[in-house]
Image (cartoon, rainbow, N blue to C red; front, top):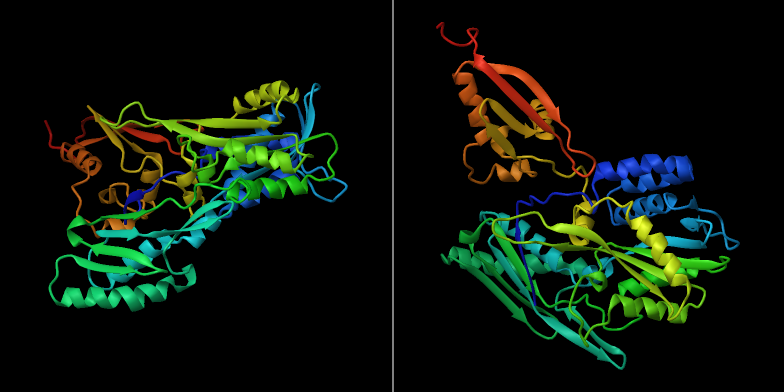
Length: 451
């Protein structure tokens, strides 16, 4: 059973998987390697919110990494008319490869628990209840065949979710609310549907949802990872010499870190099945992200790294040279700033990720704050009292403590102190914000009593 706790104000930060500045530098350097036309196509995809944004992101880091390791040509036409992402030659090995991603988006649409939670939250607001406080538990059913088992959540189709919430859940909640119930509940359990909902306003703004995992692969050639590999294997048909598929994680459970189990098939096994069925493909490189926290208390940022899984046929002498090439390629990758799950969600959103909003440092005569937050305050888009919230409108509906940065500026003003120096501390390409530091002088007679 999977249980997800979230806040309805949605303060998530981050952009895709790698930092924007890191991607931009690589885009700029790629123009000299593969030409403006190829890079312009990638840029257009990066600037368009949606699932393909993550695929374009993986293309940037893979193509840039390969270009640093040898001669790279992108979109060189095949006899079939297809234009693979990479033709690579380092003088020792030459290959043609396509870069792609795999995600569980199709399975998520078949099992729309997240959409159900959002609809309940939206409908609940019309009852005058505070945001959050919702707990949704979704039951599941198992479909068995001669090839294996598949799990499905007992939910209405995504196209009928809204009417389901309005016609089946909301009347029950209104009735209980009118009766003075403190916690509202609804439960439906039959052959097709299995849902339990509880709304407890005292738990605002947090909500949770629980369900059985439905995206762990149980059949080698019937899962999102295999489908993505198969599509590229077919597109490489007709390419001369060595061919391969390089696949980045776009939120695919088959690539997630988990203990070995006889109930599920591994990413390695899925890739080997692809090689068995497509003899024209020589290698598959799977790229995902692993993270590790050294401790949780006090909280610390996890260490993230790109985790490669290179799959070749047993005994293939190409493996040693491929390992050397891809090892050098990975050294050119920027450090990941987000896991594929959150990165794929953020890639669907418009706008930009958050910076150091809400963070500050007070030390003697100095006040340090987010460069981007300061710009947004000066532009009238937010105030310091918003405490760096990404969703400003939602945050203003919640109680909040006085903002420490605002209080610090107010104290300096009341003491008659003005800034004597303002400096910028640039953080680098793997961050997405800089710091502005204000240094205050002694009391200024322009705004302070004579001494």
